[in-house]
Image 1 (cartoon, helix red, strand yellow):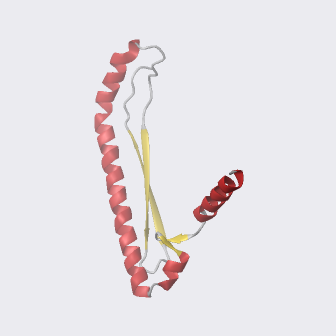
Image 2: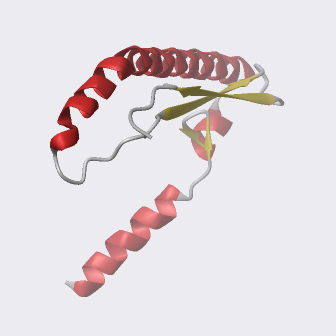
Image 3: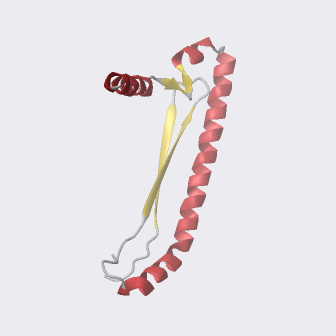
Length: 119
């Protein structure tokens, strides 16, 4: 049983280290034509842009909800061990690559609620 578990952990660890190209294994990537590779890159960039938009939307909603959450925190200050003064910072990042995959650019955005309760 112990050997089986160790083997399973090692198999998972090795597979996690396998390089990927825009979500595909090296073998899958190499089997594609240049046109197919360009389409995979475009699709990858579109998915990444959509993920970034969704993350930004979540950050905006969290920022809009901050006053209400702070009010709830202030009203609950009579509860022992309640912590005050926390501000929330959300950082998002995205990566876009050229069609041939030769250049990629990364973008990071940080948002802070800027709301603090207490000291």
